[in-house]
Length: 386
Image (cartoon, rainbow, N blue to C red):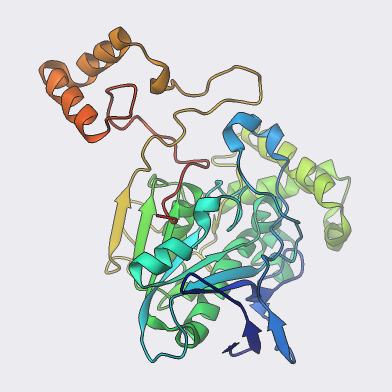
């Protein structure tokens, strides 16, 4: 049993690793910023995962061949749950803490959707405390209603307030799980990498982590401009038949109706000239004052150690929801002639040496082609579970 700042938890012990699953770290009403979770009485069981955020139906996003074997557990707007794995509790040690932020762009995903998101192996092999989490996504996390009053000033960054609340919970409770609150690394892949970079420019997150790792997700568009985000909100209301003075009615709109209206608004806003209409954190000059990595790093991020890389072969086998339509050229299906041609195209007179070096390093690969061009806007394999 562990005593947190909000109450007692009982978890499980497996192969020397303690796990605490489905721990509430915050609560929030629709479009509102995350708030501290209320204390609970008695001992709370922490042996099953908490609900995921509502997401678009995955088969509408991509073919089942891509997203299996993803896991889709019950979904809810009350999705602020985290999971913890640790080698020991109450042993006086201060282990590094690693907080994993999942991929899926800013639209899909969860902290438990892949079996590789299980923190058991990383915790055991690295002697670290591993944390994964869920947070609000898509229209629930990024609909910028700030033009409609002070009440909604944080709605465009509701998802980011969840992430900050989770990091605050980790900071306040790390020692109870054998972790060091002064040695927290946040890391994420693809969309999770974008979120890591957004947090590096979020003042309310300052001091809640000390190191960062971005696995893909390294482009510079981790935030959107507020003119675009407000245009999406304006059109969302119009598609739902709501006037500005009826803004509070959005709280009761069915999620899938809300999502459909907002998805259409994103497309319409783009067609009407919006610079960057999509679901993403909003550079509002306040909660996120500037692009964390624009022409230069913002001051609060410039001294935070950052490791950046690409996930090997991310999205090389993507198949769209239209049967058989490839979104990427899968090099695993290339024959020898095509592989050699691609190598020569990319590496010229070094092609033969590069191909031999790659096959020596990866003897089970069918195609002698190094890391392919990757797409950092969706989901790919992760290396939490090593």
